[in-house]
Image (cartoon, rainbow, N blue to C red):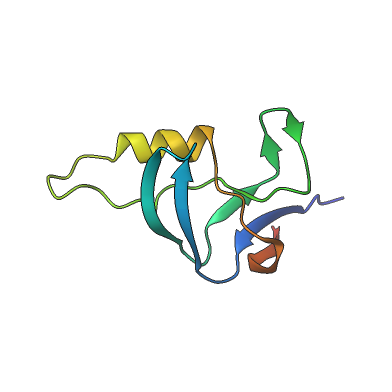
Length: 92
């Protein structure tokens, strides 16, 4: 029997003002349509959360370097995408 997995993606662009602990303001970020999401939290799987799991959309600085602070905050603080922006897709 073939097992089909289900994954989550954003079904349209999602704009969010990303501020961490009221201190670090990353400004308005646009999570593009088709970005992979996860239910994984620091305490395991929780299906109430839809965290961004793919950061390939993060723009580089003009000199070509990565925005390491933003990538750190996205990885360790996360952005929870509202359910109305989430679609579940079967993976073959």
